[in-house]
Length: 66
Image (cartoon, rainbow, N blue to C red; front, side):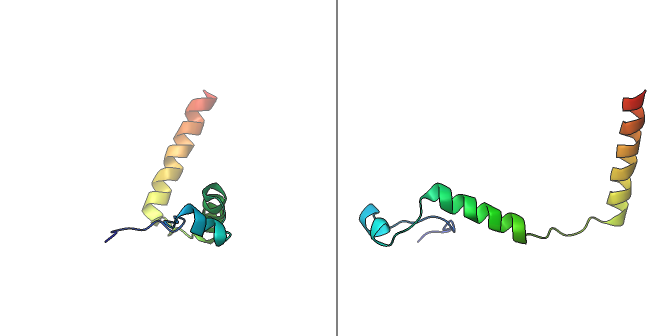
């Protein structure tokens, strides 16, 4: 009846979890985060948005040098 089951969660009892030789949650979480960072490819920015960001950065650099 769960609506969402986290990919690193383990809802077995401690004895079952230990018998399976599962990793600690913090280790599983770290491995999962590394996997996401290595595999995730965000979509490219729209060219207009990219231009706006570059203009903002250009203006900020000018103001910081002043």
